Image 1 (cartoon, rainbow, N blue to C red):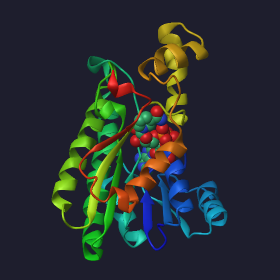
Image 2 (cartoon, rainbow, N blue to C red; image 1 turned 135 degrees about the vertical axis):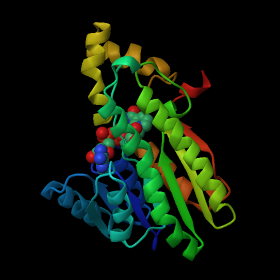
Image 3 (spheres, rainbow, N blue to C red; image 1 turned 180 degrees about the vertical axis):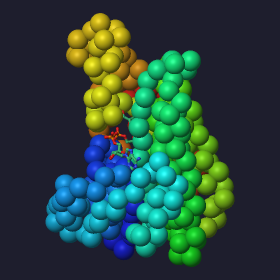
Image 4 (cartoon, rainbow, N blue to C red; image 1 turned 120 degrees about the vertical axis):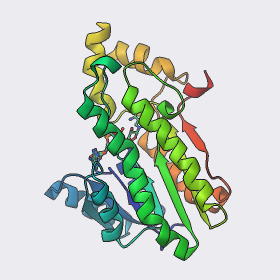
Length: 256
Ligand code: NAD
């Protein structure tokens, strides 16, 4: 269904980004995957995706903490029909102890990168009269948790940016929406488990069940395939009038 469309997914050599890239490739899109590294494994991953799904896949290195790199990614790819802003990092500390350097990095990678890539991608989409901008926000784009000030601020910012992008593109065949996942068991979440075990003096199992998934009424993690499937849906004709909004994939988190 997405044959002939080129998708760029930022931060996609692991986790949700990779899951989204896989689902877009399955749906027939040409895919550009990205991270800030440039290893043989990165390029092998692109080759594997291409072989598995019979679509062109390229890996392009670009550091989403740098505005120039963000814009260069879009240019090097030759523009895109589908832009998925997914790159993101996390850091957890009280506001008065939050390292300034971590604050700046989270705002740059989780929020400003989407501004830069969107700015670079929109002219090409407008020229074709079709485009999809999909921002991977979070349940933390709609609600807060203590100790995640930078992340929560950046993700609320992404939701706001998505609405503004939608309004500026309305009536031009271009939609912009934010997907708001609850907890998905990816490396970014794995990394939080040891800290949470210490803070709560709990076992891994108890942290997962009683801390992380306590916010998720379904009691289950969302999966990268489900986030990818949501992205594919947002690219479909059925979603052509869905713009400037959020789609939660959070097991009921934001219903509470
Ligand atoms: P992850 O750590 O597996 O993936 C993050 C990706 O971003 C990786 O591919 C990493 O290489 C890339 N990245 C990091 N810094 C980068 C940089 N400077 N430049 C380019 N790429 C960079 O984590 P994930 O869970 O897959 O997270 C993906 C997105 O989903 C993030 O925006 C995250 O905030 C969001 N999210 C995750 C969850 C969850 O529970 N896992 C929930 C809600 C939202």
